[in-house]
Structures are given as structure tokens and as C-alpha cells.
Image (tube, rainbow, N blue to C red; front, side, top):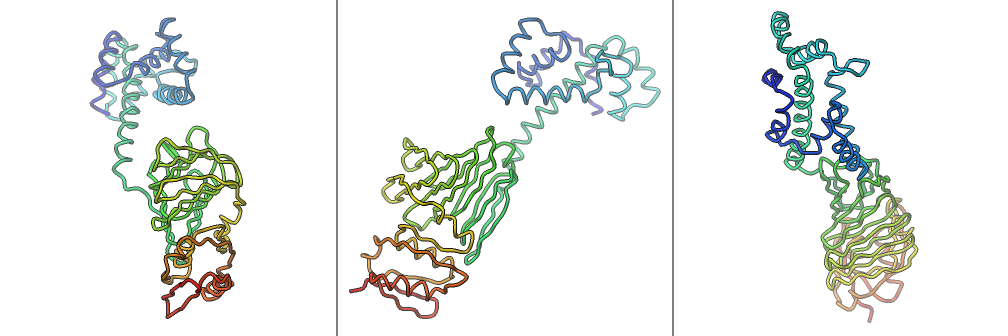
Length: 359
């Protein structure tokens, strides 16, 4: 702060050029003029129009105003007091002796208006630099990654209060600025989300093929890299699903609807479905609702830490409806139930399982 003292010699007429040198935006100049009581009617009207344009603009104005008030250039009655402002400024810098206060006092009398503006301007410069620097620092920090190991589930709360369950072998990635500058999540695998509402920051979950955008809702998103389908199941609220394999395709979902995306063809379809079973895995259940056998196999592999091979290609298009309890049923129990459909048989050697079409 010591090198800032020299700026107290600025004349009011020089502040605009100083703002340009410091990359202060025109709107911040308007804000400073308004706070100092120096804005003309046209500037006041322009500032009002800008404030009315968006909540973000009003939040920015409040931040600058807080800096202005925190600078201590106003006394309790709201008028500028040159002596106390000077003393407060020197006290905050903590770099001047009492002798320097006495010898420098006449400079403040001469430049009291520019001193007040300079103090606030410097604080604004610091604020803007902080915002810009914060973006750069945020980009340098590594993203936060949370994973659920094979055979286990993970429950957590994100910084914005959103509840997330991660299924076995899944992970989410989000930035250091989550909940402040964005609410963007990268998902690999399957996650159940109960999203805290925030109209200013939409909540987005993205995989390679799909992006889900919401404000506040409950939904399940399953998209393991080796699954043939990505599935979004909506329990409450509304969401928008964007097909990233076909950027022009976007669908709105209502409760008790499912979106199925074929990751080979890029075809996306939305169907009415009972969606409650889609999140029952958070309670220890495995619910397969019209799911392809290859995707069911991968879920069983992640849940029971086994390896399952499908020997006959004809089984790859077979779908199953079934509910299982991981706590109560072993992998053998589930295989026997699948076998009872008369569509397949199985053999098991240790942790290796082979499925064949029933002839």
C-alpha cells in the first residue's frame, strides 16, 4: 500500500485518464461518479438503465459501493471529512509516522476531493484485479474429483448444498469455483442428484454424449463409458437434455420420463416411465427397467467385483426387467433369476462368469 500514497496528488480532472490506464471500465467510472455525487443527469440515467438491466449488474454495483463505504472517506453524516479521511487512510496503510501526518496535512487540504476519489479508485482497482486474478487462479487450480470405488457407493453434498450419490465405479469433476461462478459437473458413470435451486446459476451435468441443465430438481443420470446407452430419469422438476452427438437436438423432460441415448447411432428418445426405481441403487437395490443385457452385465460387474462375458451376440439386444437387493442376494442368486427367464444360461469359475443363449 505504501506506493499508493503518491496517487493522492491526482486532480479530479485526471481521474478519467487514470481509469483508462488502469483498465477501469466506463461503467465503473459511472459508479464512482455517482457515489461521489459528481454524476450529471445523463450519467445518472445511464447508470440507472444499466442497474435495471440485470441482477448481476446490481450485485456488481453493491460490491463497488461496499468498497467505497469501507474506504472510510465519508463521515457518519454522509459528508466528506478531509482530516479524518486522511488520518484513516494513513492508519490503514500503517506506513506513515506522526511527523509525516503533520507535514503532509496541507496536501490533503489542497487535494481533498482527489484524495477521496483516489483511495476509492485504488480499492476498485484492487477489487477488479482480484476478480480477474481470481479467474486466472481458478483456472490454474486442479479440478476437484470425487470417485466411488468398485463395489461401493458414495454419498456427498456439493458446496451449493446439492445432494449427490455416486454409484460404483463412478466419478464427478467440478471446478474450485463451483457454486460461485458456475455449477457445472462432469460425470463418468452414474449419479443421482437432488439439486438445490439457484435461478442465477443453472446446474449442469455433462458427459461426452449428453448434457443435463436444471435449476432445482431430482434426477438420475447413468452414462458409463462402456455402456451402450446413456439414460436420464427425472423424478421431480424439469430438466433440459442436450444431445451432444447431435448439437441441434435438445429435449425438455417432465417427471416420470426417461431419455435414452443410443451412443452408437446418436439417436435420442424420450419415454414415459416409472422413474423411482432408477434411483433405488442409492438404497442398495439393483433395478433394471427395460435395460440391455450388456449394460446389466456391467452393473453386476461393478456391484459384485466380478467379470462377466457374453458368449453369444444374440444376447446383446435382450432387455430385462428385474429388481435385486445387493444386501440380500448374491451374484449367484441374480444369475439364477436371469436364467429362469429361459433366455440364457451361465457358468461360473471363481470370479469369471460366462453367459450363453439358451438353445
